Image (cartoon, rainbow, N blue to C red):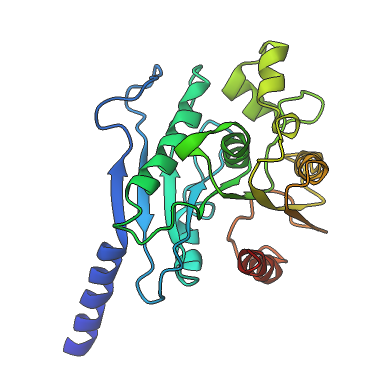
Length: 269
């Protein structure tokens, strides 16, 4: 029993070393919403048993810009990346509440924070990726196509992403909670990321299900087509079934294949 307690204590100690919580805006954020209790922070998970590769992934969970699926689309991914020697930084970003800039400035600041801590966390500033699921995929792809300077990621990983704000095939909940139901057309154009791809957009890994009834598959497909047209390295995997929101859940029929393909892609560059 004493040995078991000792091992349990060591496991907890290792977890406490592996994880840090850092508030993004200790001096106050540039934009604030009506929800003053909604704060932004990151949870940092560093490799403990595998040599660091210098890579890091900033993870943006989904939730339709109303909440966050922080588990299976967020912190549950930390061991997967850590076991590959990749640091994982899970972003708890704020909801827009009528101020569209809020989630984007949180994601950009998370990337800047990672680069500020690069030496401390054994991170290569040219190996900073962003990952997002569903509406988090819209956030991640927005940063990939819009951010500049030290807020721009080097690669992007997108799971069943919302990409467009075009009402004909967007996820209307994400559209309305981000831009508003009556958003002007120029804003819809600005945040339709399939229309914002440029040759300098970072390489991408995109996965989704053919039977997704929440976010139309055309979102991810149109983004891949735009990346390909701009000669941006990208891969697209469309699974026959799975619908939406599977994240890291093992109940997803193609869970093993998805992880294998992700790991292979990460080894490819």
